[in-house]
Length: 191
Image (cartoon, rainbow, N blue to C red; front, side):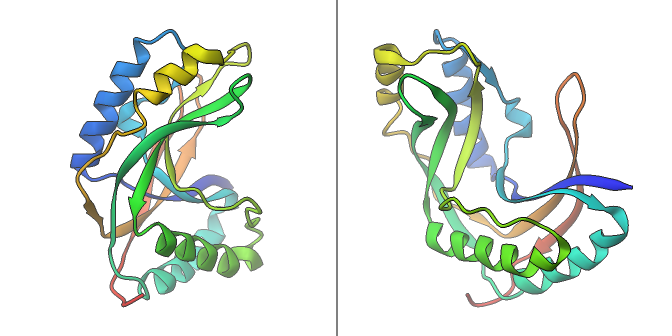
């Protein structure tokens, strides 16, 4: 049986508080967005897709070995923005600061090591972010969107330690996705 899964960082409480407050404020703005439930927000590193259950242990062992080479990550929020264009926005997000380059190196290491399992490598540059919502198809941006996003460009949070990577199962349901923790991987190395 195939399990839809991904690797992500859980967010520390200090970051969750800022994310939740910002998300709540933005839902009151005139934006045509499907908002992500703040309780389900995470920082995805690698989307694995549909993986055969029998291969998850092998994949988990590879992920564990890679994580053992890395030390904890220090991260904080750093501004807000959107992907897409001002006329055709797609995703509204919060940016990150801190060990962003090391996080990109972790992602690259994971993607290379998981290639033999059929996990496709992302060709886009890694831009770590926290997705707050996705614009609806008929959403138009324009100056109102620019003004709203400008008011959040200086948003920050305290720097926080992220000490583990999480393997999640993702079940898509009509009421929204349900995420289940399958395994946690601690960072214990020096990279």
